[in-house]
Length: 131
Length: 289
Figure (tube, each protein chain N blue to C red):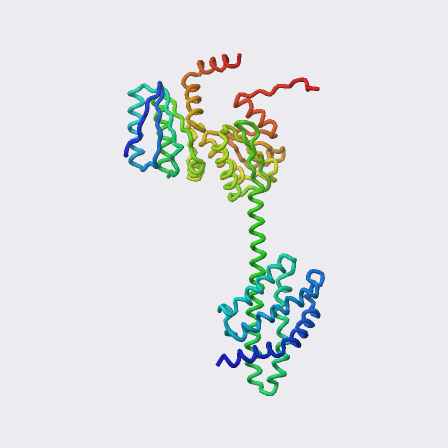
């Protein structure tokens, strides 16, 4: 397997990285993702990395790049499910990834995407809940 | 060549065991390093008898110049046991080593009695005996030190474990009350206990309380920021609370900046903020009677 599948869910794209990526696979994913965002006119991208156990500086930077590229194409990006060891590695590598939005799991990531893409509807939904 | 020599010392141990023991005990009790408060005379006598009992066969069977051989293992084990127990009883290392060294005087006296006429042989035997007892004494001191070091290491580990509990304050809110000085090793422990707890409990807010941290300098701030950044990467927001007025002043004077990390003066403020973030409201009600 040398491609990461990109699934379309409503207005969003779902990328679930289930293997430890090597550099070429990451480059391929970057290409595929940008193409798909344009082609599917996606409003948001959810990148699930809960199965990724190992990262290096390259993969760390790729995550940041993918988030920035997605934003440049007019869509929001959320990285979800980062493992503690991966988070520590990225911080120790000195990559702050300040431009990347994160969430604990796919559920919370989806919520965050909804509120980012459609703030008024989300607020309305919350209001109706409270009433 | 070595066999007759070792036999001679072993012979003295075998033949003169009783008087040797009496002399040895007298030397030990007369020494300034004796600690009758820590070790009663009866125990000292018992240990001395046991030591001679393991020493004699070792002298007879093994070489007197090398205590690493298997024949000396019972002697080494016995001495290791004594130094460990004395380390915990509060003896100093020299007091512990004196137990072995004090055997020299009675042993030399016996050797002199036996070989008084033959000065060359006497010199040889005394050299062998002193080398052997020095080695045993040093071994005792070494084990004693090792025992102390083990105690210190264990206590350090316990302190690390004790000082970083992760508490769940509410559904979705975790807190880490930090106590003591933060260094890179402790930050590592904090990260390693906080981050998995975030995953395990699915908490989106984490409060790092530094009320118990005596001083915050650039290094401590950097360590805190690392923890906060790692938690953020996993999708949880971190709040730093418990910043005392003194610390706030020092931080500004040092130019320490927490950037866009939310900081609060007290844990209560941080909790209130966290409640707002996760959409909880706390309301006051008339107390139930």
